Amino acid sequence: MPTPKLRSIGWNPFFDAQLTSADLQSTVIARVSAHHGSQVEVYGEEGEFRVPIQSAEARGKVAIGDWLVLNAADHRALRLLDRKTLVSRKAAGEEVKQQMIVANVDTLFLVTSCNEDFNLSRLERYIAMAIQSGATPVVVLTKADLCADPAALADQARQLHPGLAVEILDARNPDQAAALAARCGPGQSVALLGSSGVGKSTLANTLGARAFGADLATGPIREQDGKGRHTTTSRSLHLLPTGGVLVDNPGVREFQLRDCEEGVADLFEDVLAIIAECRFSDCRHQQEPGCAVRAAINAGTLDERRFASFEKLRAEQARNAAALAQRRARGRDMSQAQRAALARKRRGQPGG
Ligand SMILES: Nc1nc2c(ncn2[C@@H]2O[C@H](COP(=O)(O)OP(=O)(O)O)[C@@H](O)[C@H]2O)c(=O)[nH]1
Ligand SMILES: [Mg+2]
Ligand SMILES: [Zn+2]
Image (cartoon, rainbow, N blue to C red; front, top):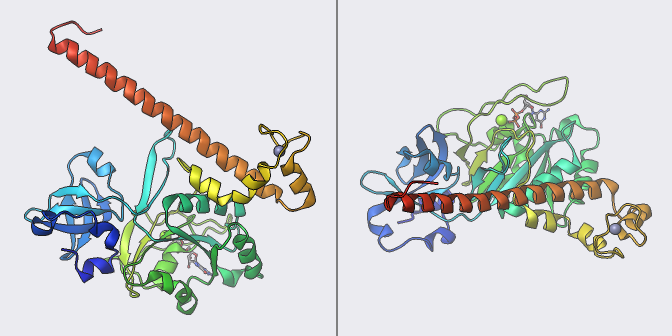
C-alpha cells in the first residue's frame, strides 16, 4: 500500500491507478535508483535494497526512476508500472537503438554554463527532448559568477520557447540554488541534464542531495576547452532535503534525438507557422519565389541560426524515426520467417 514515504519519493495518483487489489496484499512497491550488474538497486518503504533481474533483456527495459511491483515475500520483480514521463535518446553508435536516461521525472533542469558551453542550438536539442519526454524543462545557467552579462544569455534562452523558465546562478551558492527549490518539493522528481563540467554535481551537492552513502563526484574543469571531464559514471536517485528526488546524470556530450517528432514540432511552432506561408508546399526555402522563410530571415523576424537548428533537428529525428520503422518491419519479417521454419520443423520438413 503506497505510504507517505513512497509519496515523498515521487509516488502519485498516476501510479495508484495501476495497482490491482491483489497488489495491495502480497506486493511491495519500490523505485529504481541504480543499475548494478544483474541487479537493480531500488528504494522503497524499507529503505534501499537490491532486486535481482536475471535476464539482460528484462534489465534493459528498466530505467532509473521506474516503479517496480515486487513480490513481498522474496522481492522478485513482478511488474514495471507505466511511466508518466521518459527521457530517452538515440544510443551512441547504434543505428536506432533507444537509450533510456530517466523515467518519471516532473522537471528536467537543462544545465549549461555561461561560458563556452552556452549554445542556443544545443539548448534547443535539449528542450525538444524534454518536451517529448513529458517533463517540464527549466534552463539552468551556471557559472554566472564567471560571466560579465549572464542576464543577456538568459534573455536569449527565454526566446527559444514561449514560457520557458530560465534560472541564472552560481551552482556553488546555496542562496542562489534555492531558486530551484520550489520545483524540488515533496513528491517532486527532478533530473539534471547537461554536458560534463557544467556544474550538475556541484548543484546537486548545493541542493543537499543525499546519494544514500557516497558523496557525488565532482571533478576539475579542463582549462583548454572549458569542458569538464566525465566524472559521474552511474546515474542514480538521490533524496533532497526539500522533500523531492533528484537524478544526477552523467554528462551527455552529444546526443541525437530519436522518435522526437512532437518535441521538435512543439518547440519550433513559430518556424512551422512561417513555413506554412511559403507559396509552394514543397518549398526548400532556398531560392524559390514566395518563400516565407527567406522573407522572414531577410526581414529579421526569423533568426537564421534558429531555422538551421530546426532543419537539422527535424532531419535527424525523421532519419532516426524512418530507420526505426524499417527495423520494426524487418523484425516482423524475421519473426514470420522464424515461425514458418519452426512450423516446418514440427511437421518434420527440411528447413529452407
Ligand atoms: N565558478 C564556478 N564554478 C563552478 C560552478 N558550477 C560548477 N563549478 C565548477 O566546475 C567544475 C565542474 O563541476 P561539476 O559539478 O563536476 O560538473 P558536472 O560534470 O556537470 O557534474 C567543478 O570544478 C566545479 O567546482 C559555478 O557556478 N561557478
Ligand atoms: Mg557530475
Ligand atoms: Zn520556403
